Image (cartoon, rainbow, N blue to C red; front, side, top):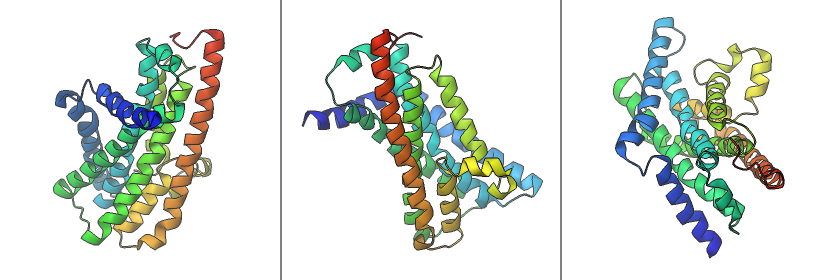
Amino acid sequence: MSSLRVFFVGGYLAYRALFNWLRPTIYIPTMLGGPVFQILFFAYIGRFAGLRNDEFFVVGNAVQASALAGIFGMAMTIGGERWTQTLSPLLATPANRIALFLGRALPLVVNGVFVSAFGFAVGWALLDFDLSAGELPGIALVVLVSSFACTALGLMTGAVGLRARDVFFLANLVTLLLLLFCGANVPLDSLPGWMQTVAKGLPLTHGIQAARELADGALFSDVSGLVATEAAIGACYAAAAYFLFRFFEADGRRRATLETI
C-alpha cells in the first residue's frame, strides 16, 4: 500500500511541480507551442524541397514530440532535485526506488501521448494530412509505446544526472540526437550506414516507422513486430536506468557527492 501511494501520489505531485504547479502560462508554450512550430517548420521545408508530402512530416514529428515530455521531464525530476538540494532528503527515505521514480514516469508517458495527439490534430487542421477512424487506435497504441520508450531513455538520462554536472544540457543533446537519428524528417535509408545502425537501438525509430505504415493503410498486425521492438527497447533503457541509478546513488552516498553541482 505504501509503495502504491508513493507511485501514484508522489508521481502526481512531482509532475505538477515540473510545470510550476501546472500554470497554463508554463505548460502551453513548453509542451504544446514547440512541437506545433516544429511540425509546421519541417512540413513547409519538405514542401519547398519536394522531399516528401505533409503526412511524412506530420507523423514523424508528432510521434517525436512524445520525446519532449519523457526525456526532459525525467531529467528534470532527478536533476531538478539535485539542483534544488532536495535529492539527499528524498533518497534518505525508505521509499521503494522503483515506485518512487516509475511513479514520476507515468504522468510523463500520458503527457507524451497528449502532446503527440495535439501534434496530429494540428497537422490535420493546418496541413494536407488526414487519418481515417480505423487508423486512430493503432496509431494511438504506437504513440503510447513510443512515449514509454522515450520516458525510459529520459529516466536513464536522469540517472546519469546523478554524476553529470549539467543534466539539462544532456537532455537537450539526447532530444536533438533523437530528432536527427530516428527518421522523423529524413528517411532512414538516406542516412549513412552507421547512423542507421545507431537508430535501430534508439526509441522512436521503430515507432515512427510503424505509425507511418498505419497512416498509409497498413493493418496493425503488419506493424506488430515494430511495436514490439519499440517496447523492448524501452524496457531495456528502463532496466539500464534502474541499475545506473542504484549504482550512482550508492557511489554518491560513499563520496558524499549526491548534491554536488
